[in-house]
Length: 444
Ligand code: UDX
Image (cartoon, rainbow, N blue to C red; front, side, top):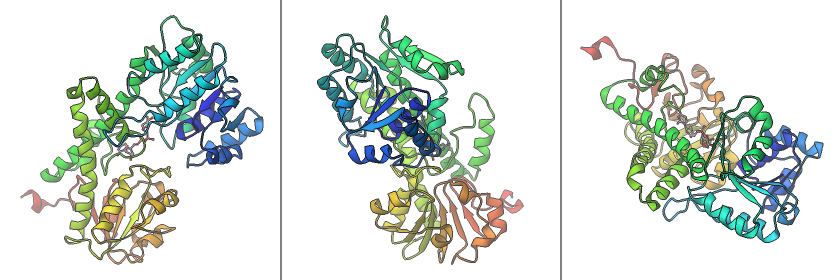
């Protein structure tokens, strides 16, 4: 079995397939990535993955190569796991890497009866076009579309024990039976399988991400209303979340979503809908995107007002750089976007993150970096929590007082216990919650 593309998705998939007992070769054009994976180093932060990588390299079931000739005719099943980045021109998905890897397979030659399985997130219609190309070159080869829903930080678990498996296949082909055999252990463990056509399989992925993004922007829009109404968005989210039809997950308000998937996927989905003549159907996603980006701006404004109207010349200790905790990924990170905006406003910003500083440092040179919470907050006029790492949730507000110049906390992720921080002497600010606990006098 071959896994083509060894980025986040591909490296995890290759390791997990080897863990399930298959002999797997991971292929990537990036020789540096191949070299690191071959010696058991995962080039990104993902709990549990490196251990499984080493175990499976040692077992001899897993290897990596930068030569397409090592995998093209060798593998009976090829998983396409290459990236589909955002096209700068219109926000659509750039299919360069998908096309390149399919061309490379076709040019080198596929084994008789090979199954090519697409996992990358692609605009609907891509699978049908690729199937036609593959079929023209290798008439007995088949294509299936099997989208991947893994979350960073939970990648191994999400791959080995997904919520569902979706197989987009051609009717009457052998692909469904072959995919059922590949995922037999997962299916036996009770994972539901949806067998459908290519277009639906492609859409399931982007529809799921669009729904999740909408849920987050919905609660962040409620936070905007809470701010003008003097209400509390956390209590609102808890209350609506108890309704099982709504559910409490992905209803955490704050500075919004970032990362390599949700922002890019909702833009690519809109671009594809526009191409298909259905722009109106997804017009609301432009609003979802706008609410999301507005949350970052609101955090900047909140910090400014917490410091009396300007951050110019003030020292800010920023806790968090990754787009979410348990990750070193800074792609479209709300935390760094906010930190950079504050630095552009004249603030002296020092950032600490348990994992993402090496990635952030070269990309955000206007920021200073610290190697501990204490170092980041020493002398700060205000402290901002912008990624909710467990380490930050557990901070002792009284102990931090002796390091800061001003006891001002801006909690961008609702990560801290507001009452506890206020009781320790901090002014605590967050989006969508009253600036201080209401008193009887407020009600009169
Ligand atoms: C997402 C999807 O969850 C996953 O199924 C898909 O395969 C890839 O995209 P990921 O990007 O790893 O996964 O992160 P996720 O955990 O979904 O978080 C995305 C962003 O939303 C983060 O910035 C997070 O901080 C934010 N978020 C999440 C909120 O602001 N509020 C929430 O309630 C949940």
